[in-house]
Image (cartoon, rainbow, N blue to C red; front, top):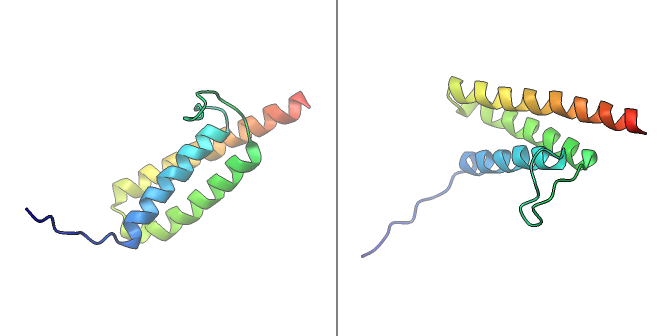
Length: 95
């Protein structure tokens, strides 16, 4: 039985990558454990880069998304940015 190969378009790859950056940002802010070690750690520089990349990808995807998905990604990015600012402030207060 032959399975037909389906072409993956760039927008599918962008959504997949966007989801990876979002998950990575939560992990690097210390909210999710590293899947390899099971431990949490804070790496704010990495989190900032992941958030910036996710924001860029969401902008590229926006014209291709349904309004509901647009709002969902906007919400996720807003939550990431707010939590990043909180973590950044905590880090400054500890220093």
